[in-house]
Amino acid sequence: MNLEIFPENIRPHIIPKVEGKLFYRCLGCASEFPIEKLLYVCPDCNQVLLIHDKNEAALTRHSGDTWQKIFDYRKMLKIPALKGIYRYHEFIGSCIPLDSILYLGEGHTPIVEASPHLKEKTGLNFFYKNDGQNPSASFKDRGMASALSSIKYLIDQNLVSDVIAVCASTGDTSAAAALYASYLKPLIKSAVLLPHKKVTSQQLAQPLGSGARVFEIPGVFDDCMKIVEHLSTQYPVVLLNSKNAWRILGQESYSYEIAQDFDWDMTNKAVVVPIGNAGNISAIMNGFLKFYKAGIIQQLPKIIGVQSEHADPVFQYYLEPDENKRQFKPVNTRPSVAQAAMIGNPVSMPRVIEIAKRYNQESSHQNVFFVQVTEQSIMDWQLTANQNGHITCTQGGECLAGLINASAQGIVTKEDTAILDATAHAIKFSEFQELYFKEQIPDTYEIQSHPGFINLPDLITPDNPELVPSQENRLEEKDFHRFVQEISKKIAKELNL
Ligand SMILES: *Cc1c(COP(=O)(O)O)cnc(C)c1O
Ligand SMILES: [Zn+2]
Image (tube, rainbow, N blue to C red):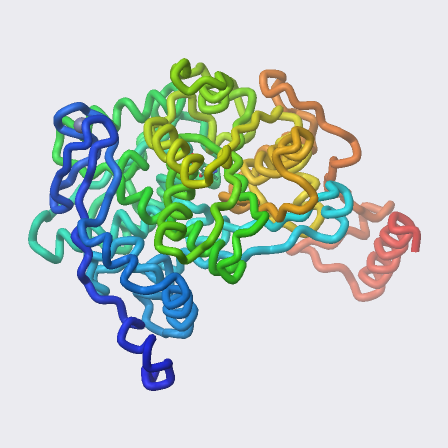
């Protein structure tokens, strides 16, 4: 693309310069560590880290207006490294040279307005942002593009080699990790740990298909996470869970895209996010804060975090109104159809606490809310959304259930436009839909199948078994004609034609 077509004041900034001076900072003791180290927790106090930029001043060297134009014009480029989350290079990983960036098609997922019928039914204005349309069919690809680009960068600088990447997963992290690691074959090998029988068969198929080593571990996600943490402290492995601060950095792109999708106007917007390990909501709040500080957006949207009754440690924490009295207690999870968010001891809890506090302060009023929903409402709202033209997973159903709840509490109003995170594609979680339709959801989930939602295939056969065609025995032309007529007649009757 000919850069001459861009306005003169934008042209020098269209291709980002590699100038960021990133470093890790501990959320516990504020110690700082060089970004070239493979680091997941503070070596001094074991707390999680966030990535900051010593060259932060560079983010205010342009007016918010100019940044908006840079990003809008950058949208026209054909350079693969800048087509995904790194469109916002200065905010996402400004130390990474373009040729170390991994791009597999992640980011810039569609924002789809709720169908007219769905809007009428809920009485609310909202959009789904379809993060299930990422390459491995969940938002985890955003963080993984960032984490794997950072590793590629270290490999390119000869700072690491023969990398073995590991993660624990409720299903989607491992699918994304295995995909992105396999793209860098043979530089990186990956291994994933999954809680046995606690991921869907589609999610299990994904890392297997990408050629990763897959280990199934008895217990729940929180147990797998402990093993992976142990591995990462005892052995030379790269941790790809959202404990890895690069994951958070990449997932901030979700906020940047929402800002750009709404032409940088965040007035009366509410962003609804399901919470599991709490990496995503941390990243989303942090992303909006960065754009706000750089003057790219003038308002901070409301943030609404949603949890199921069956896995609600973050919601429980914030039930105490006095922040000095709040005490975090992990919960024992119960089976949840929002299985990707079924986490009792979220790794990013310290991040949520710190960032939500800053978010409220910068907003000058409470702007982060947490709501809890029933399993029944998750399933019913997911099915309702999908029967009205959407493609959301159960966690996206959780978002819609959360929006309804937030509206009942007056947290969102009819004046607001909500953006719901369809964190994964519906097909990854179709097993829950199937159990619902067959009225076979185990009692522990506490979900009844409402007849109005149930949808099962009807097998239509001819009355005369002689008239059934098969691959081996093709029917005579006359019989085949009778078969077509009879079946058509039966279908027409079913459809009241
Ligand atoms: C991981 C995941 C979540 C939870 O996100 P966290 O960052 O762990 O809070 C929600 N939905 C889906 C589909 C996921 O894969
Ligand atoms: Zn520390």
